[in-house]
Length: 347
Image (cartoon, rainbow, N blue to C red):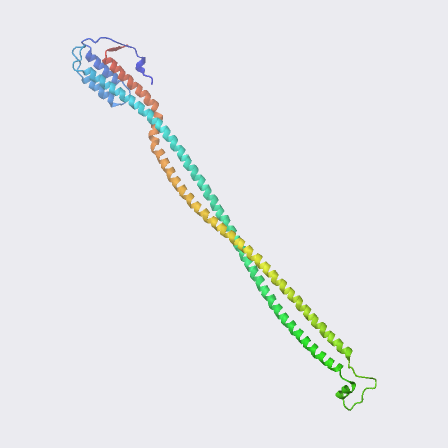
C-alpha cells in the first residue's frame, strides 16, 4: 500500500537540550492529526505529552523516548495485522460466498430434478391406473362373454338331448311298426288261398279270378315297408347330423373357452405387472420426496449461512478500500511521530 509518509522529505539532526519537550509535543500533534475516531491514537498522544523529557538530549536516562517508540512500533504492527486480517476476511468471504452459492445452486438443481421425476412417476401411475381400469373392464366383458357362451352351450346341449330322445323314440316306433308289419306280411305270404278264404269267411266261395296259391297283396306290403325304411333312414340321418353339429359345437365352445381364458390370463398378468410397477413408482416417489426434503433443509441451511455472513462480507467488500486509505493515513502519522522522536526535522 502507498504510504504518504514516504513522499515527505525530512532530515535527522542532533537534538539540542531545549528540544526534547518540543519533539514530544510535535509527535503528539502528529498523532492527533490522524483522521478518524480511533481512540488508540488519542491515548498514545496523551501518553507522549505526559512523558518526561530527558534533561540531556544525548542521554535518554529514563528511556521515555524508547518506550514511546516501542509503543508506536507495536501500533504499527497492529495496523499491519489488521490489514492482513481484512485481506484474509475478504478472501474468505469471497471463497465462502462462491462456495455456498454454488452449493445452493446444486441443491436447487437436485430439488428441481427430483420434483420433475416425482411428477413423471405420478403421471405414469395415473396412466397405469387408467390402463388397469380399462383392462379390468375388458376382463369383465370376456368373463361375461364366456358365461353367455356357456349358457348357450348348455341350452344347445339340452335341445340336442331332447331332440335326440325324440328322434330315438320316433325311430323306435318306426322300427316297431316295421317289425310288426313285416312279420304280418311274411305270415300272409306263406298262407294258401283256402286258408285265406277260410280265415276270412268260411262260408264264402273262393274268388274265381285267382288260380293257384293266394300270395296276398305283396306289392302293397313291400311299398309300406319301404316307406317305413325310408322314414327310419331319414330319422337316423337327422340324428347323425345333429350329433355332428353337437360335436362341432362342443369343439367350438372348448376352443373359444380356451382362447377366452388365455386372453383373460394375459390381461391379468399384465395388470399384475403394472401393479408391481406402480408399487415401484410409489416407492421411488417416497425416496425422491425424502431426497427433496433433505436437499431443501440443506439448501435452507446454506442460505442461512449466506444470510449470516452477508453483513460482514458486504461491509468488508465495500469498505476495504476506505479502510486501506485510512490505515495508510494512520501509518503515516505513526511513522511521522516516530521520526520526530528520533530527531527528524520535517520540511
